[in-house]
Length: 81
Ligand code: SF4
Ligand code: SF4
Image (tube, rainbow, N blue to C red; front, side, top):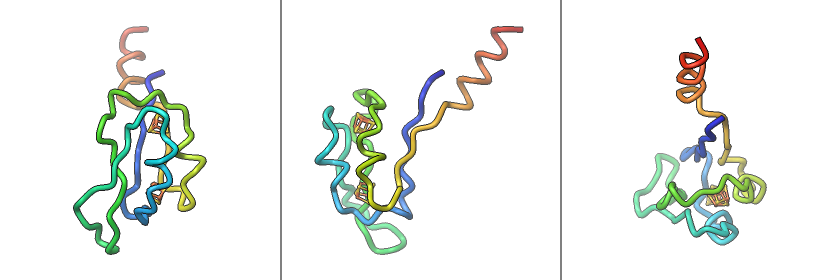
């Protein structure tokens, strides 16, 4: 199943812990302020993400999740028919 890395911008406080922990240098802090007044993390290089989950574990605000891609799942279901 294809995996999807999602950062919930409104939960992120821009602490930068995920940016530091990422072994693939995928994440950066945005220069655009969120509705809550923080500069949130974002995937600057999403193609380099290996879905290791280190950023999810590190985030104190549980703002990052990795889920199975529903889009891909739907495609697979179509192929199986
Ligand atoms: S899942 Fe791993 S590789 Fe992907 S952004 Fe998080 S720490 Fe980096
Ligand atoms: S560790 Fe969490 S709160 Fe901190 S910058 Fe990353 S996503 Fe935002």
